[in-house]
Image 1 (cartoon, helix red, strand yellow):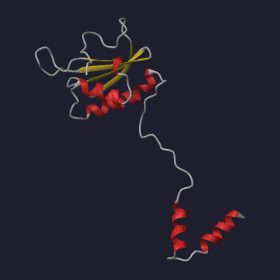
Image 2: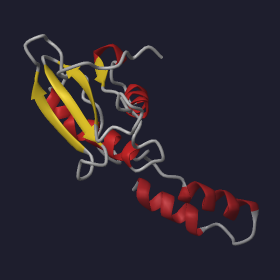
Image 3: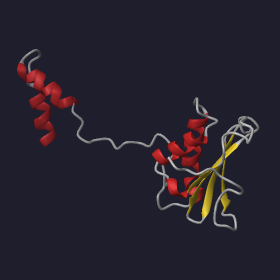
Image 4: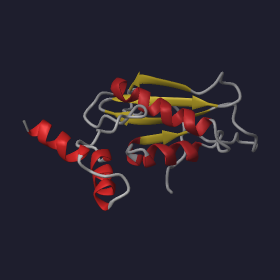
Amino acid sequence: MLALALALALTGCTPGGPAATHSATASTTPTTTPSPTPTGPAIVPDGSATQNLPFFRSIVDQVAEGPQAAQGRAYVDALVAAGFDKGAMQVTQDLTTVGNQADSIQFSVKWKGECLVGQVGPSVPGPQTRVLPLVPEGTCLVGQTRPIDW
């Protein structure tokens, strides 16, 4: 009955008049707000390292496509901006001891007793990401890493 009354009210409007403008506006207004759909992976704060690997990988891939692809700081900064804890990160040096670009750089995020690890560089066939166990010292990367003091 209500639908019939609404239909009659809308058909009673004359084109070009104020009522027509009002009814056209009212009829194009959505009755429900659509919920946004995710455009890609997202961080899972309570999830495991494996559950967060797709998001970690998406951040690494974005940086690797940019002009700072060989700079460890760019990965750390992008991961922090995406919601990862800087205090749980490690990164290797960008340059060798004689000042040449490193063949590869590694960076990691300690996550719930595991490690999200990334590796990029000229000797690596594209960005690599993995979930790996902590090393016995409780860190993610072996050897000397650079301080993340910025």
